[in-house]
Length: 131
Length: 131
Length: 131
Length: 131
Image 1: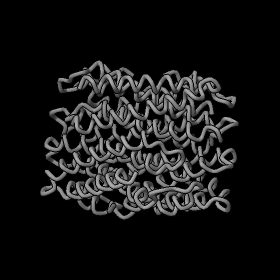
Image 2: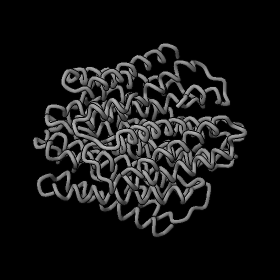
Image 3: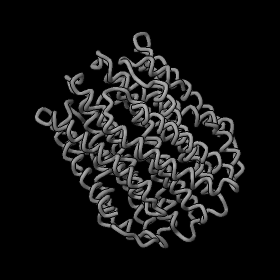
């Protein structure tokens, strides 16, 4: 999916296209990663030790998906709405990355998810800094 | 849907059940309202004058849906994740209520949506105050 | 949330308003119920015995939320898209109701969720029959 | 996002990993594409001629996002739930591709979206054939 091609095709002249592109990609990728990690955790024998990881991943998946949508839209963007949602995404990704890092030695899916969460946190922060 | 009955049936002892119940209900109701308002705006003859209303309603629908999910979950809640998402929902509902109020005289669906957004903003603020 | 008031305020003349209203309400209620049930199951001591229930509830929550949105929209509805999504929702609700019924004696949240799923299955079927 | 790496890290032995990977990627990509196309259409001067395109894209975005989630999960998969959701996604992508092709000569974003929808339709069909 080339987000950049879509943004180039938008009828309005947009700003921060590179950072928006990076942020949208990171949000959708992190939403997928968190969905996959929650599901893999649920199938682990020690699922009872992964309750917090599953819960945080489910929240983070939903928050990233919504943030990806909100960032992707370029028609009549309201920064008063966009900024707090990006901040919520930064917080969720930071907390989810830390939780998954706790299990990264034991579970490869938690390691992969932590990497996606950290990348998404960074992309949201960079877009926030550019707004 | 009786959210309160579900929370009473949760295996953990929960706090703020009344405010959580009110907030979950308000978030899902506002997500529905914003989805319905965006769709009705799209069918209006003067859709070109409602571009901002449609865009804000779509964002607010997604943010309320995600916030409703995050608030509903009671297993291993992390306030560091919950608070910013509630704040993002307060901001989105406030902006969407104001936008819909601009069209409330002309469009009954905008009037109804503004009411749902204001109710959701208030429910999120009351839960935030109780955390 | 009065879905019916919104539909009355839609600029186009709509058909099946009663059944659409009932279906939208049931879909959003079932999405909430499945989110709450998955979360309560995750907190149960015997979470390892509830893996299937959690997974099905997560799927059913997402499917009902999407179906609720698709049914709610009244602008340029395409029955070729609407019908299969309603059928997918009927299938998900039927399977989730059965899964939750298996645990209804032990867990009140599963009993409540089964009831919501059955109500949603019925509302989708009644709308399908009316299209 | 490397879906395949996640699936390799899943505690259960999975089948159809390649087709599942392709389908999850295509669903998330199509959800992004439809979100971006609906938003770009909304900003076009002739938005009144794009009402159907916007509505179908919004539905298709939600359906692909949900289908992506359902396909991604590998714990206790129920084919009775998975199949109809894949079929709903095939229908939505087929209809959305056709709608966007109508505007592809005028709007590059519709052309890009039609391509994503067709790719997603194909990926869902190939997974359906393999189940």
